Length: 488
Image 1 (tube, one colour):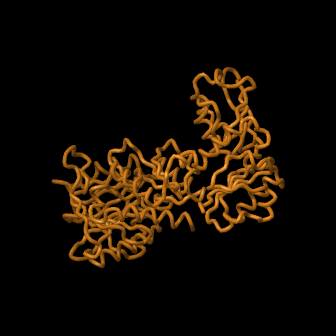
Image 2 (image 1 turned 180 degrees about the vertical axis):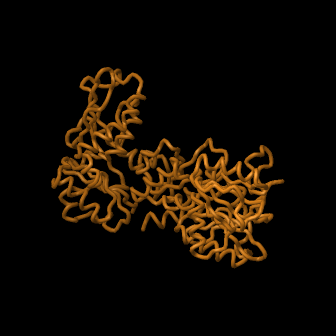
Image 3 (image 1 turned 60 degrees about the vertical axis):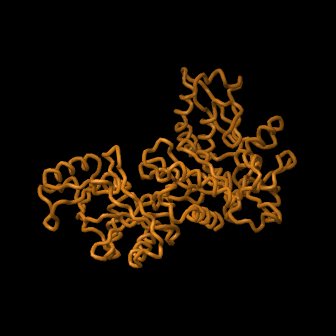
């Protein structure tokens, strides 16, 4: 028996919905009474689509979404979505938010129907020029069927009103509705596959990124191995934020930062209860070195001697406990970016001036020399793989961002059992302080003692580099992780 992922609630007219073995249809009466179909009664993480005709307060549609929340079912629209759809201030603010999408549509008057009203099914309409607008409206309002009523005032187009549409009123558009439904739940693509996928994973990446966390071959391996694990893997870019609900899980393979679209994706995944690497808390914690310093300090975990100074207290001399060279860091630099080694007071002052132009605080850290860093990659509080990252040629860091040639040091993969136990122990302890996601813990061994240098979310998994020793096991472990948390 195929797994049922979606339960669709309707008031009537069940037969007009397209049939698919991965979804079941139930009447609102049966859903309210708890009389669920046998094939979904034990389904974990069940997704519900509420297509009742009336979402008004204390009406059938409202109660279905309310009960879905109480039963732990992910429902569209949620009871909060229904409340927002009735709230005039939310309408006003949200419609103002889509104004730029309307302004970007060329020749809008030529594509709109005579009555200036357009119906959207799961954010899709039969007017291609309105695709981006429809996705944004669905992202904001979460109404499976809605009608946007346009108006033109002094030459400027806007949406005057937006309102739910009942399933019973769209008989002539049922074919298009079923197509939109299929695209929303994924069956539009699944029918082209010979193997049935249990889950859909979105991998967020940036094809233009110079130093991505996974190279092209690694992304191809995720797709190939995902298919073996019965995951349909789709590469998405930052334009797909509004479509995130169509997936079971999100894997971010673009360099993360808090003030960045990757964080917005992570936030949305959290709000929609979609398992995500990297989760929002991990991004916040790992992207700020001041936070990491305080965490390590509070747990008495060895790390380079560090102080942070503010723009207001910028000292004229180096702190007495330090000696040159020292390392200066921008608090939110990722993977050695925003990190500089300064050799004298003149360089120290100059580099601080640069940092204070973008940050209120700067980190001053003692410089610890080593020929390589240990990279302990941890997933779900277990070691995934271990590498030695050697310093770039004639440089003090793993990556020399100022060099066009030979800008990265060698990477040696090391069997986990060959790594000093104390290094593994510290790495696992540090990872547990951040969360249960995917982390790259960088450590230096000085006189046999491990020092934590960095705690990275979004660690590199590159084909031909980090996977040279463990191979496909790395990719398989990622899918095992997602399957575990999808079903929790």
